[in-house]
Each structure stands twice: as structure tokens, then as C-alpha cells.
Length: 209
Image (cartoon, rainbow, N blue to C red; front, side, top):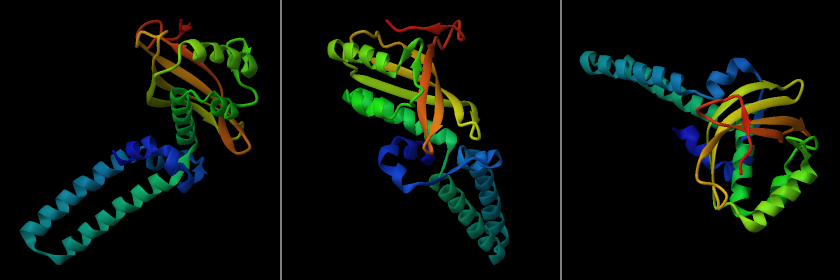
């Protein structure tokens, strides 16, 4: 899907995308327009079949209208960044920085209220420094993002996603992560996270080795 390609290229494309949409009624269009594309695709096939059999120029106009509607939906999906998409982009930034070992960029992007278990950002940075110096991350993949709950008025949100880390301390297993976000200065910033087994005891937090 085009949207997935855009998300993958987010670090370079984000500055070009405009605005944040908070209207839940528009989420079907801005976060997952696939059903709309399917409807337009079926309509296009039906119109082209009628054009083939009846040779009526009005069906050609209808086909152009359907194509225009599809392009318009794509532009809206591309140009508008929802709260959920901004959180997803932020997680992808963190994964990219973790792979490159740039902890400074990661911690500059954290919420001022960040907590991991009982650690604040300072204590968590010390833990990350120890891991990075001895067992640096070689690869970090994140996928299958899901919105848990987002309250734009309160500036609080949570999303879930799958994550897999390849490093000397990891055997290549993947986890289901739930990440909490706080909105600060108009941006969603990571405020905490927890890891879970994606298959069994899925509500029981686990701690990597």
C-alpha cells in the first residue's frame, strides 16, 4: 500500500506533510483508506464494463470522476498526519536512532514525564548506556501498529506494536510493546512503554534479559 511506503520513508517525508487531524470521524480516510479504495475500484470496474458494452461517453466521464476521487483520497491520506500516525512515526524514529546507537537523539525526544518501570529518564539513560557499550543493537524492527486509546484534549495516548531486536543479549524473539505518549509543545512524545509476550500471558509485563 502507498501509505505503508510513506510511513517507511517518514523521516524524510514528515516535514512535507501538513497538520494533525483529531476528528475521529475522519480516521477512516486519514488512517486506513483501503476500504474506500476497494469501493472505488469496484465502481471503476463496473463503469468500464458498462462503457465497453454500451459505448456511452457518460460512462467515460464517470470513470474519470472515480479516478479523481481516488487521487483526492490519496492526497488527503498523504498530507494529513493523525495523532496515531504521529505516534507511529515517533516510534520509527526511535527504532532508527537505536540502530545507529544515537542515544542522544532518542532521549531528546522523550517526554519530560518519561518513566520505564521505576526508572525516570536519567536512570533509564544510564541503563541504556551500559547495554549500548557492551551489547549494541544491530537491528530493530517495528511493525503491526495498533491504536489503543488517544485523548487529544488530555494530551494522552497509547499505541501497541510489535518489536524485534537483534543484539548479543537477544535471541531474536519479538515482543508486543505498549507505548504511552504525552503531548508536549504540540508534539506527541514517548512517556513510557512496557513489553509483553505476543502469544501467551499477553497482559503480563516481561523484562528483556
